Image 1 (spheres, rainbow, N blue to C red):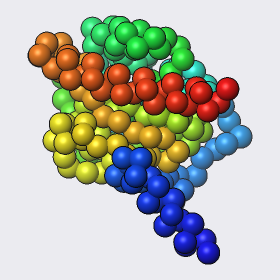
Image 2 (cartoon, helix red, strand yellow):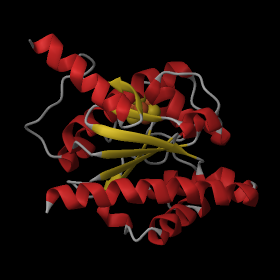
Image 3 (tube, rainbow, N blue to C red):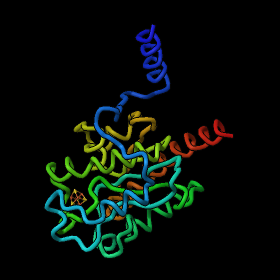
Image 4 (cartoon, rainbow, N blue to C red):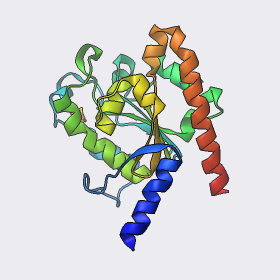
Amino acid sequence: MVLRSLQQYLELMKLSGINEIFSLKNDIQTDNSRTIEELKEKYKNCRKCPLFKERTNLVYGEGSSSPILMLIGEGPGGEEDKTGKPFVGRAGQLLTKMLKAINIERDEVYITNIVKCRPPQNRNPLPSESEICIKYLYEQIELLNPRLILLLGKVASVNLLKKNLKIDEFRKEVFFFNNAKTFVTYHPSALLRNENLKKYAWDDLKKLRIEYDKILAEEH
Ligand code: SF4
């Protein structure tokens, strides 16, 4: 009986365009007795991987404590390392504008990264570093329970979805991570490097806004 309803659920998901479903239940033990701000405080001196050595500040994440939407990038850059806040440099300013373009304020969402400390020279995080740090992200997703996730760029997508696709292959698909319908778009740094990508990012954002509206309609 249960299996039958699970199959029906999976078929329903496929019909709504969702290709793969990921669950966190076996990956983490969330400390539900703490708030997200208390967890941020708890981990602020983390030294579990070598990235702690060159950081100024650990960039845990910031935003709403009950977001519909969570945005996930790959790791902090220079400005983020200095301030301890995610996406505050040029790419972050563009991200804030992208959200505004679909009428979402930055403080309505929660923004974080796969790794919480800046990789030297802004290189991609190593698999060994991501594998350790991603546990904090799992915990954030479990605790904040967003209904939508937007992954920014290939590095974030590969690490969360554990699939080695090209960015445009990711963008074409819809995933389901924990309780969140999950989309992929370009990292804002890629849009700064290549203006031609902005029209595709705009298509992704419009798709996201439609989903956001559906959730708002369900909740009211
Ligand atoms: S990157 Fe993550 S695991 Fe590594 S030291 Fe920073 S917080 Fe800890």
